Image 1 (cartoon, one colour):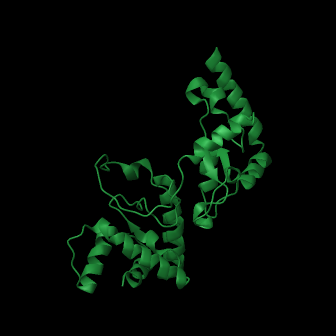
Image 2: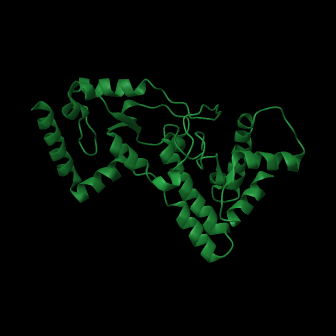
Length: 253
């Protein structure tokens, strides 16, 4: 029921609020419930995503947004630890694919796809209400939060520095005690690809925040080795190391 409607939304080159889609489903099915929207709309979108995948359709669920124009924290194709910006960026790419396939007329398809990839400017965000509390229900992939600590402990015991495997940035060297042993830990094979699995410490990579974001920036994601080669080709490692040394010397002076 919801999937054909989302195709129509794609043809219009626009998006649809979760509430509007929920009202459409209720009107079409004649089913009313006392449950709040967030308690059941996720199940509807999950079915839409599965059906679209079976039919070879693009990710039509990306067309559903909240009142701020963002996708929810349970966006099906984003990793559970993705930031809101990363989720929205991925959803924008998926919308572009929807518009390119369904939008009426090549010009509309190109315009909608282009607009979907343009991030909002400060002017676009002027006057947005923020800070309110909301209740959200979503599915996340299970992950062991203790893995990060065990990975750091293992690296330390091996005598290696706690630094980014890609660019060699060391938070402790730059920020002193405040940054000591800080890093982000990344699954070399994303959980959304591996599914349920037994993760070993060798399956994890230590990254700085910048490199971690660059790996997740575009779909398909870069591998750690792929990003390392990209940084090496651009000569960025030396510049990063020089900047790190400069900040370290500034802090110590």
